[in-house]
Length: 233
Picture 1 (tube, rainbow, N blue to C red):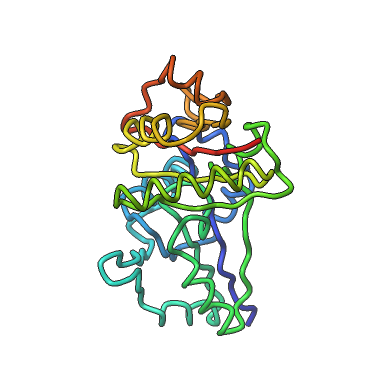
Picture 2 (picture 1 turned 90 degrees about the horizontal axis):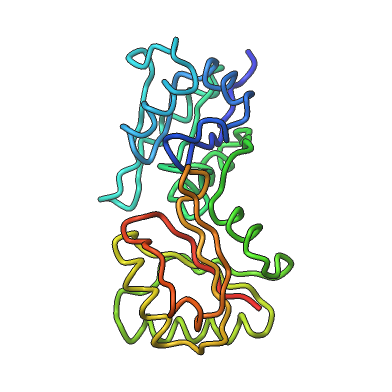
């Protein structure tokens, strides 16, 4: 019997952006009835948006346990050896990039399971593409520290690296975005270049690169909106 595969399935970054998902993803959804997901509600809604005829109630969903270091029932991967496909889904965008799904993939490799990454929207790469900054050398710093002194130190470290030509990509919890912008204006130098990429792929998508001096004059409303920030040169 031919073995199934572990598909890394991208999902939309914004609810009104189904057009950003390649058509061939539908074929994968049709052929897959087992899913390991970060967010059950998001995954179910996405599957129905791609293939309305799919009977969600016939599917098996295994939710990554964020309260237990994103553990999951590893035994489910053995279904692949019985010829079944399994899909791995992030809460938004592509799996395993700024996402806890990497442990699933790690175990799949240990079990000699074929892992298939699929094309789809990724806010980190899309922001870098649109920033105008160096795409040859860059670093993704993830979420910034919560502690005020650690955040300030991290912002200054990233600023120095960016001025050397290494683009610095970072993010924060959406409800802290406005505060973070104020912190950058107060902490970093006014000639430091900052790209703000907000609500990527949504109808109100906003992507702009300016020196901090200009951001101080005109601060956009980014409160509670998913954003990617980049320091560059």
